[in-house]
Image (tube, helix red, strand yellow):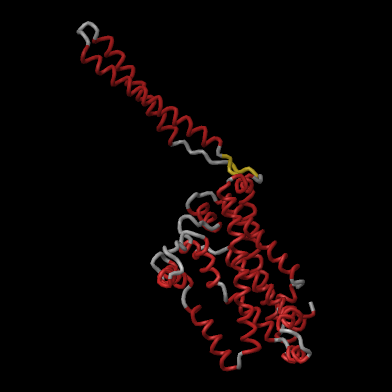
Length: 360
């Protein structure tokens, strides 16, 4: 409230009112309402029992139609071979069979033109479907595990880079290294992912180098395994780990590091007791952003994953745009959101930081 009063004193009531209304509309229209609609959709289970009943009736009528047509063909053969005295009786049977076929075809047409709207029933059936479908459950768990692995690898790679940029590299060198990190990200994410597609392909640079050096005898199929997706995601989202850590380490007083060195502290203790505790908010933000982006990625696993390495976002996409079942898709999407929220709370608990620390 105090911050709002300060803002009003500095910019006036008109600008303050505009900012409050704009933020309120953005929060309600772009965040709260879509999430509430998604929850509502996810709890609506469409009762398709009537559709199934009609489909079964249509299938049964097709069976009856095949039986009648087969009987008609048999009667036509009998008619050709029958004596003159027997022909009237067979012709009568043929007429009855033709009328029967006509009735069955009319009934099939009527059933196929019957529109049955599935009635929504509020239940947790859409959520239960994920845990009863072994394939989708395995893909969901794999996505969470692989996203955590991408986050861990990115942290191991980015922490020394961030520390070097913030406290070791001189100003000009730090600027050049920062530029070298940023320039590749001026290229579209899809193009960068396709570059990794060529690097990791069966005849790509990695396989040619490894086979040329004699490290492996046969090329490795990176693209039909999870390793290709993990490599691509680690590269794609590495900046989201570097910059938060860099920003927090950059605010660390260099005199603390020099004092620790003067007192004989080894380098690992300096990082463990001074740098990492100071950088905890940046590490938490980097882990949160990297995990959420990796868990919600669609383009990278679609390009680098192949047909045998599906990602959970691909399953959600299929429910929305191919399966046509937005209710199950919403349930899957909300479960993924819930996992991301749990991960955020876990990171805040592990690093013992609050929202104020993260917002800085």
